[in-house]
Length: 577
Image (tube, rainbow, N blue to C red):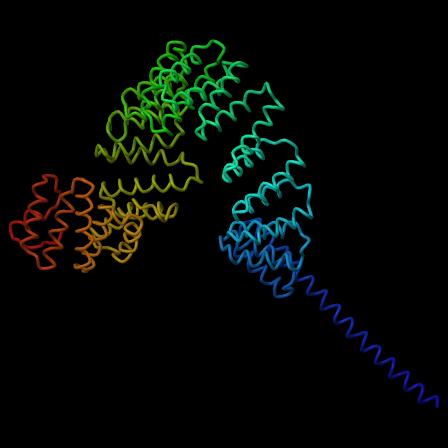
């Protein structure tokens, strides 16, 4: 009897021990999984901070393998794909994140926002409605909800959302202007203008609301109503600069040009107004003239008025110069810019604007402007770049190379576009100086900063073709340029010539023919080099008489540097360089 009891006890004890062991193993396993999960997620966030997105994805996938229902991981995967601009995958992960944790604000916000971005307006509305209900004090959500309704075409509910927001924050200009636009879209003009009128009633002495109402009437073509509002505002403060601009616009719209100019002239001679305000008025007026495609010459007389009043004001010279440049009066504009630059020699704007009036029309003047600018601003790379470009055009290659090599040292290391252009120009100079190896190394450097620099790709591929080197690489680079600008004669000729050197004569002919065709359409001069290339490809495709015709045309240009052109004409045969 006792033995049986003992045996049973032993069995029970042993079974209990085994179960305890299983439980411990399971707990250890879960603990190990949790430890690995936490490690991988922590590393994913570190990689995210370091912008190592490939590593982010790898770590998050490890997390997913451990727990595919973790909302935080799903949310971060959504962020990852959103960063890569893979919006549909991001949407899918955000949706899953909200399905596992529907109360998290950030998950829901991300999901709602991407629904809005992908024009899934009904889903966006549903999400923003939930967010508003859960976060009634978050004012930003009402704006998102209103915008979702607007984009979905439900303007009434868009207004309802803004009304709710207005109950929380009180009277707000942005809200009222948005409601004005919505009511206008619904052709409910009375309600639209009432939105602005309530500000005038609450703040009767604040001109900005009366001016705003007048401007909105003017935009709607209600000139009589606009004039009544402006007149009321003028009785409060006739010197308000915004009112003056609005009145000038009113007179422009009602075809009373003289009254518009008079309005502005009164403001500009007013001793109550500082020069910055006057310049602001003029800038707005010029903007209006441009927007309405009216003659900007009207503003010149107003500048003359200001010049008499403020003869020593450089900012006035700068703005007047901009207006004159807009009118293509480059010499007059340059004079105004020079006055500004002399008064503010360490401000690069004056020198840069002077350059815009000189390059590339006047090479010597460009060099002088750059040298003057560098004497005051020795660390500004743009002036070295233009000086180098001008010296290049003068065929002063050594001087240009020296200038550019100095200037590139001042370029911000993050300004990839400018670095690429500098090294591209330096590469061109090495080529001109007969240093082909240095040119190609420098072109490669330029392309590390901007792989799609079309000018560099074109020149690099063309110079490779001239020495019949790396023609496959040349073809790849040149093909990028013609895809980017399929009507560019220079790029077409280069690509055609690379194909010629590869022996693809029929295709080559198509591209060089197009180069000539687009040059003629654009009324651009066709260079002797292009004409000679066309003659060469014609010869290779069996059109020998026509080939001779184009070789002669190339010769007649008088600027050919070809060493074989004369022999081609003499022998009526293609001769390789």
